[in-house]
Length: 500
View 1 (cartoon, helix red, strand yellow):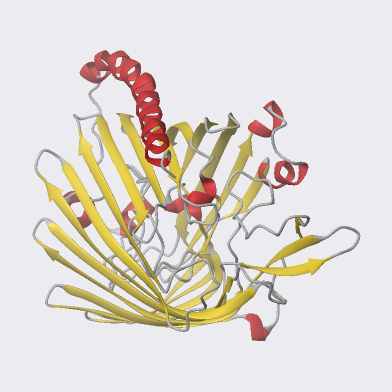
View 2 (cartoon, rainbow, N blue to C red):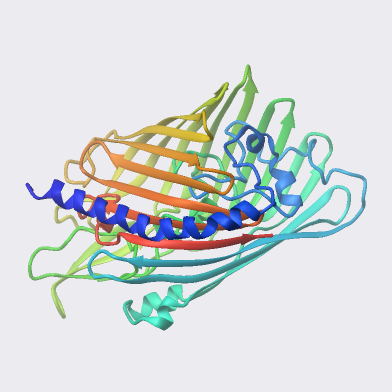
């Protein structure tokens, strides 16, 4: 234990040196290009101009804004409607409008330098989205994404199941029809994002979204979120907004396959027992396993306030355990999805250059792993998550965000990994060095124990639609900690992004 601070300091120093090693030459090489460039950089999403830009304006035109790794440009403020038909640029009298196309292409490269060192990503990712109108009251969106990771061709580090799961993916993204029914009602039918929460770096009130967690929570939200096949009805009346959803075919979190870079950790078996995994068990497709929810929101006196109820098969899996003794003693784990109920709310307010946000979610019925030798290795726990944050727009093009969060286990079982109250903090600072370059650091940590993640990165906004990123992801903590489970997954990465 006495060597832990020295080890942590040495790893942080190594990461800092890696960032400097790759960043300084890039900066020096880029100075002439920056000086000669005459393109205009789109406003950041947290600037005044970025906040005022409406969601639909970005979706209809080929987007010029830069995406943010730790925030989501396309989601509304808490308490405000996800789309306002009264302000929509599509709400004209034209009976038909050909689709307007937008999308992105990315190249992503990552090298895990923690032991054992290996290449962990050589990914090319492309998405194409189209939005158009069939009549003056009926619009649509279609979208698809293709991912190919060449790391599984270039190396043999990962098991075959991981290669098969993550080498190539063709994904259906948002594909829906919008129907406007009078002045106050709108309906959306199809595969869609339904975003009910918007904190930095982590998910709290965003209970409807499924997530692609094969890279943990590291990708930006537009890649991380998985759309749901849903029917959504919305009612607008002044500043009041009501939203009812039904999801007949739910999507679930994608955690990957055992042996993948960020596959979740499970409690270790006793000596003499192996750890094995059965195939994930998804709920049967039947009416009893569909999801539904209601969200009400209002804006008054500058305060955006919302409340919601969501009844679902949990998108987040729980690892159930079975103990076998033949043909070899083993703990056999299987990911399953519990039926849960969630009740929560959000609040947001702007105080000049400071934005306050808070979310709370009560969850009933979710199961957690226990360390004792129970029959199935899990116990049901009811929890309350509370998070509050302040976002500051400072002088010299600097943004600073601080959040504090806590999860309380009401019927706490002493044999689960978590304490009765799990508390944490996050810090995000972004500084615009000049017209083209930004430096950013995100730090998230537990207060209960030494369990943390730090993510420094540099951003080069080369041209209007081009962005290059160089960063480091560093994890520390115990083997079953949220971040400590990836203690040997520290990596250096770079990305090239083109948006059209």
